[in-house]
Every structure is written in C-alpha cells, then in structure tokens.
Length: 258
Image (cartoon, rainbow, N blue to C red; front, side):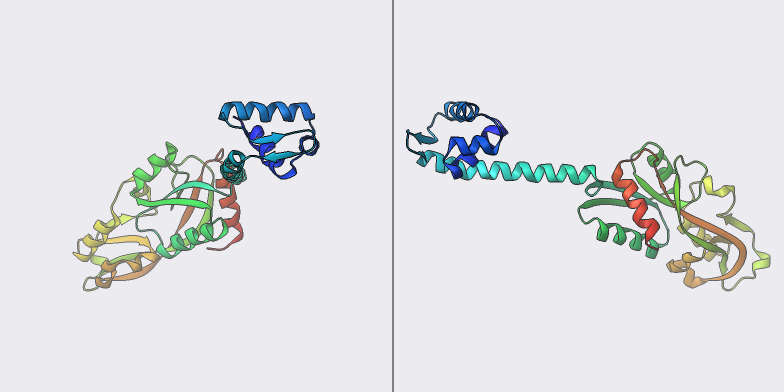
C-alpha cells in the first residue's frame, strides 16, 4: 500500500468512474485499474463492484474509506508541519540567558517571539556565565543573551546598553571600601555569582560595579548606589549557519524594540 493508491481510491470512491479518476491524475485508466486491483489484493477485500454499466463502492470499501481519509489528513498535516519548519515558522529553539539579566527585557523578548511565531517551541533557561558560553560554543544552545564577551563565536544583535553603577552598603562610605568586582573589566571571564557579590557588599566587605538593572535584586534594599561613567551592553548571540528559524527570530527582534 502506498500514498498514491490511497489517493486514487479516495477519488474513485467519489467519482465512481475509472475514466474520471484517471483524468484527474493525468494517468491512464489502465494504471488506475491496476493500482486499485493491487490495493484490493493487499487488503484481501473488494473495494469496488465493477460491471459494464457502473462502478459501486462495497461495504468493505466504505469501511476502509474512513480510515483512508484519516491517513491522508495526517499525511497532509505532516507535510504542512515540515514546510513550516523549512520556512522557519515552527520547531524547537533553545535559548540560554545569563543569570541576573534584565528580567523585563528577557520576558519581552520571549513574548515577542511567541507572539510572532506561535508554533515555535521555546526551551529557555538561565545559566552561569562560563556554562552559558560553553553550551553556545558546543551548539547546545541556539541563542544566548549575555553581556559582550570575546569568548563567544558568532554574530550578535545588540539588545540594550545599561549604565554601570557602584553598589555599597548604605551605612558605609564608598571612599573607605575596596573594589570587589567590576563587570566592565577582565572580570567578565570569571564565573562569578552576582548574588554572592551583592551579599559581600551587604556585609560591608567592599563595593561592586554592576548594571543598573541590579536594582531589582532583593539585596539592593540594603545598598546604596552611585553612578559611574561606564556602560555595559547586552547582546543576543547566534550562529551564522543556524537554521532559518533562528534568522527569522533575529529579523523580528530587529524590527520590534524590546
């Protein structure tokens, strides 16, 4: 049994004419007759009653017709799914982002993708810096969101630039505190937990220089902040030779401000 045989059978069950079905598929009547005969032999049942005056579908044929239509419907759905995937309109996209990123930006980005391509399945998770870079370079992640980093291989899309501020305990003098961490320096290649840094600042061990969106952290209720003349940029990194679905996402994010 093959798809063509099922297509011929469904058409013949409606036309009840080997001639009309042959014309519909632009093949000879003999070919249609042979394919229906082969299908009947494989099923072991007669599908049609033929005589010189007319063609009638058998009770067995009516029973098989329901299933034949179901099979063709599933095949058509499968074809549509594949075509949508080839166009980059469906499939699974794995997205990783840096822990302690701008949560409003992350949510906005994911919502934009889901709204534009509702058939895309998004798998997303927050990672530590070194793990995020490793998974991206090993192609375990399709897209990653993190601060600019030279260890990343692939093109990128600038999402947002943030001012950097100094965070320190409210009851201390900034001038008396040592610098514990500056995200704009070579520290960016160190797998540092931001929560631990903010906790150290809460314990008056020093001050840290981080993005302004860190104000969202619960630790910051214990901290003061002061501006710096530095900035830090958040990027979306992707692979140049990625599937069409990734390039579609990049295009919609370029058009829609996050």
